[in-house]
Amino acid sequence: MVFARSRFALMGSVVALTAILMVLLSGLSEGLVNDGVSGLKKLPVTSFAFERSVATDAAFSRSVVDLDAVDEWAGRPGVAEAAPFGNTLVNARTGGGVEIDLALFGVEPGSFVDPAPASGERLGSNPGEVVVSATAVDAGVRLGDVVTLDRIGTELTVVGVLDGQHTFGHVDIGYVPLRTWQEVRLGIGPGDQAPAGTYDEVTAVAVRSDGADLGAADAAAGTTSLTLGESFGASPGYTAETATLRMIQVFLYAISALVVGAFFTVLTIHRKPEIAVLRAMGASTWYVLRDSLAQSLVLLLVSTGLGVGLGVAAGAALATTPMPFALSPGPVALASLLLIALGMVGACVAVLRITKVDPLTALGGNR
Image (cartoon, rainbow, N blue to C red; front, side, top):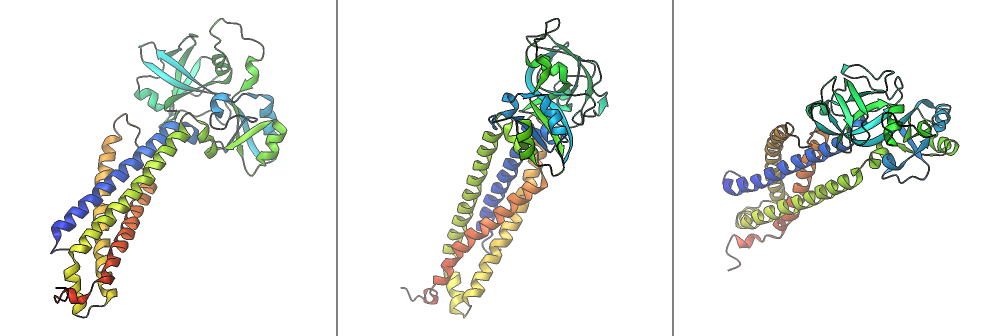
C-alpha cells in the first residue's frame, strides 16, 4: 500500500465518496419518512380501524367510520383504549399573514390520543382551539395566534405547541376538538346549519390494544384494521416515496460493488508481475490471497470511516435547512457495513485472478 500509495489513494477516494453518498441518501430517506408520518409515529396507538374494504393506500383520506364503531372496539377483549380519530388537510392563514397547510387531526379532548403540548394548554371545551406542532412555529405561527381556515372562515386559536416534529403528508399537524373537525370536514363555516349526521362520522377508530383479535373486532365493528406501521402506507405519497428511495439505494449498493470490484481488478492486473515474483519465491496461493484481501479490507475500513465522517458532517449542515433530512445510527451503520461487505465481495472476485498467475511470468518464461 505504501509503494502504490497513489493508486490506493485514488481507490480510497472513490470509496469515501460512495460512503458520503450513502450517508446523505440514508438521511434524505429518513427525513422524507419523518416528514410524511412523524405525527402518526408519535400517536400512542397500536392500530387504526378504517372503513371496511377501503383502499389501504389512501385510507386516511377516503375512510368514513360510524361513531358506533368506537364503542364496539372499546368493548372488545384485549383493547385497552379506543377513541374516534379524524383527519383532513386544510389551507389556513394567521392574522399576521402567515400562510400554512395543516393536517387537522380531530380528537376527543381528554382521550388517549389528545396530546400534551410542550407549551401552552391542552385542548379544552372551547371548539375554536388548535394545538400545533413545533414545525408550525418554525413556519411563523405563534402561541395565541388566530388561524383562519380558507373558504369556510373557521377561526382557531393556537392554545398549545407540541414538542418536536409532528407532520403528516409533509405538512404540519393541528389537533382540534372532534366536533370542530367534523364541521370542517363537511365545509360548515361559522353560522352555517350542520346537516343531520355531521357529528356521527370519523375517519377511523384509534386503538391501543394488547393482543386483541383485530380480525374478530373488525368483523363485529364493520371495519378494516391496519397496525400503526401498516397505516403509514395509508398516508399521502408514503408508499411511492419509500419505494423510489429504496430502489435508488439498491442501485447505489449494486453500483458500489461493481465500482469497487472494477478498481480492485485493475489493481490486481497491475500487481501481476509482483505477485508472480512472490509465487516464484515460494509464496503459497493462500498467502497471496490473504495479503491482497487484507489490503482491501484496510482500504475499505479507512475510506468508509472517512466518508461516513464527512457525510455526517454534511448531513448536520443539511439538517439546519428546510430540507427533510434526518440521520439515525442504525441506517448509517447498515449502509457502512453493506459498503464494506460489497467491496470485499468485489475484491474477492478480482483477487481470484491471482490464483491463475504463472510464476514463470516473473522469470520471463512467457517471452
